[in-house]
Amino acid sequence: MADAIKVDGLAEFSRSLKKLDTDLPKALRVALNEAADVVVSDAKRRVPTRTGRAQRSIKARSTRTAVRIAEGGTRAPYMPWLDFGGRVGRNRSVVRPFRKEGRYLYAAYFDRKAEFGEVLTRALLDVARQAGVEVE
Image (cartoon, rainbow, N blue to C red; front, side, top):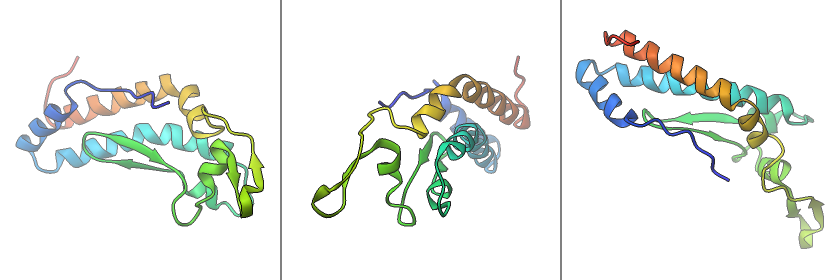
């Protein structure tokens, strides 16, 4: 199910930025988070709320060469069950129909994939311009 967007040369780009200025790779992380926020905000809108913990558990996690979107965690351990379904509880008695493609996170990603790519491209170009690299 992991349909990823791979940017060829991103690691080399990050290393080159670090040689120019040690703060530029941080700008790269911010650019990746900016692109991920497109999907995160859409996924959060899709999640049903009672307390809001499940919505707040959806977050972008990035390094200078990758970005991931996580859900659940210790504050909302039930979020993956909400998204994908399955059986939980005593004797696995609570059933939610399983969906391999999920209900919220992957749906938001596939609906916003084009916008994600555009924002990512624009953000990476902005980082390159900050570094003083001419970009067409």
